Figure (tube, helix red, strand yellow):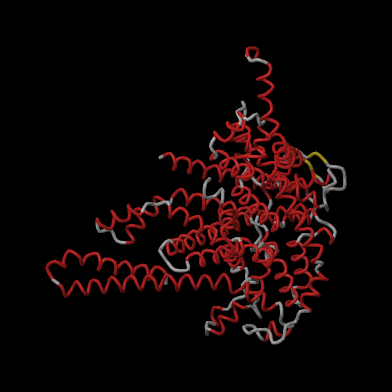
Length: 297
Length: 312
């Protein structure tokens, strides 16, 4: 096939690969290789010191009987439901407000986006103090507002702790999703709204019949991003509660970390991380399918 | 409160929207009323919008300001004088936090790691994206899709850790940079590719006629006008690398190798129950550089950090 092509041309055609090669090599060695070769780790029992022992699929079998996993997964699901719904409603609501001709729009936008540039560690520590049962700002404020019945041990109560973390996650990210919604809103033509107004559509109708349907692609981006964030979450629960009290904020990523780096069960932790990876990938794929169908129609 | 307000606005809208047809019949008097109610409606929306935005602005900003103020208070004052300003400025909070948490090392490490990551990602991604956008070769689409399809999947941490142990890269800055570069490449390539594709191909054709090789054209013509794309990638990678915590947590052993997030967390675990004012000082040192950078270049930051999600 290639014999017909003059030699010079063929050689020239190879140079584009040189442009891509450095990036590709980096990517293969430090991302794809650990992903693929790491599969071997799931088949061994290894504490990092003793020679590894081949155990076949035992690690995966153990996942099925690990009592912590349903708990951790449920926590991830709750965390996802809380953060996704909270972020979407708040971000969309504020984006709609900011989409009007308001004075100081860009100041509001800039301020609400600010937590995005802060590290989760800083945010987590700061909020552990706001939540502090005795001296925290939140309980102090509730006391001042004479709302003492709302005073809770925000991070110490097993029923509340996970939702307290959800609030922190929303606080850090809603400005981000708001900006993305805002970008989406600005692509919707004003003429549509004018036409609807002439037809006598109320604001609420304009919102449900025009804004929401046209915002669907942007909505999917936002939901996908926050959903994947919720299933990979580690920093916030690790810094703020270490999974406690009584495992009530233990999420999958934390369970993997503890299995690997506290109990040195590397094989088991590796198996777990593939389970989580598969789960997140499947979710992303479903979402992507959704998205491409949306944009085709 | 939100739904109620919406409900109220809806009702108000209906009245204003219904009124115009009846105007003709009712004459001048109700025209004035309708105008007035429309203006009132507008004014209420304006007021509600600002009140809501101000409320959320306070929710975002106040904790940060409070952290900064508390970093100057004495230990007792943090508890006794919760809402007020510090009575005297306790600068020693900063000096002791700086020493105990070894923030000097941490800042240095964070700067090296973040800048290193940014430079390597930008160089590699720009080159690869240039080939994907402007050069023709057989497996271009396939290779590009390798990056894009695996972009979202996070590396399983244990295999990565074991590999870096085998390579002797734990407890080193390079060991932090390399995985972060790999993680950052796909989105950077994606952004650069979109930008290069938007450049007119006449630009390169002209360069070729003048006898430039692709490489020279890339360096002399393409890169100098790629400022926006470079800024986007730089901000995205810099913020990501500066705030990266998990990698540092599993890879770093010695205190001199800690990055800012790790140093802060270790300090918090050790002193968070007693020396609050120092913890707040450490938090301020950790977050203020980034916040100031953000305030100076807010437009680029917002654009950069949402790039990829808006277009992709």
